[in-house]
Length: 343
Image 1 (cartoon, one colour):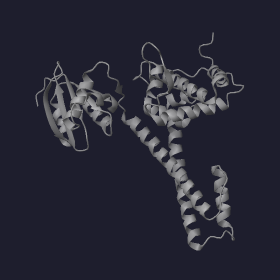
Image 2 (cartoon, rainbow, N blue to C red):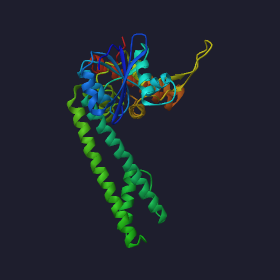
Image 3 (tube, rainbow, N blue to C red):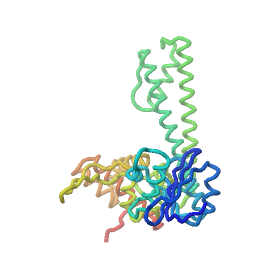
Image 4 (cartoon, rainbow, N blue to C red):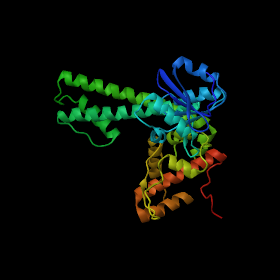
């Protein structure tokens, strides 16, 4: 396939791929439907071209493969391509919208993950799914026990101790079938906790051996989980021009709805990676609870803000600061300085 296209939009799926080329004037000059096995041989015949792919499942893999062939590949978030779709939704119109967005200079792109980042992200996602399953199992056992007139206090340790004592009692009033079912549920809960410990050890090993994560662990509010999640999502931070861009990418900046010269700012946008944003906010809450008496400029600032605006606002504002600090440390290779900026 010969090409004089300046931009190519590639709509990917599991088995059917549609590529559409635009010339310098934005006119579609060719379209081709490809099978999965035809994608790389077809693009290998093309000269280096600007290629756009919508960020979705499998997009990072195809972006890396096309980059290896010499193409300038960019991933575009779905919300940034949707505005360019004309007519009904189909693969051809989607490819045209991707190519149109790729041709625009103002389009913002999604960073292409390396294989190492994907490995770490998969570990985090698997761990998070296991945490949710473990929580659901605990709630399920509590609900079943409630049906037999037994309730347990809040807290995992108190719940496990109370459950063990109740099941071992002679007069618990449970039939043989009910007792067997409860023991089976407890065994599933024990298995989930054991697998969760395996994931935690793997993440701790990454945090211990990686130089960037070791520096991030020095920041108050950033632990093993958050440090490795930052590495998986941000890598070296070079995709962002400044720290505020990372904070905005994570949805930690105010949402704006201004008009007529009057600026209106509301709560945070909550865009981007919800998992990493949640970790940063929870880490900020933890740092804020332990901030009294510590000689750290950022923590002292957060405490004063909490006095004026409350704990919730201060925690989110501190999470914003943590994201910016993490970006500076990753990009410049700096160690954390608690008194940075003080003369």
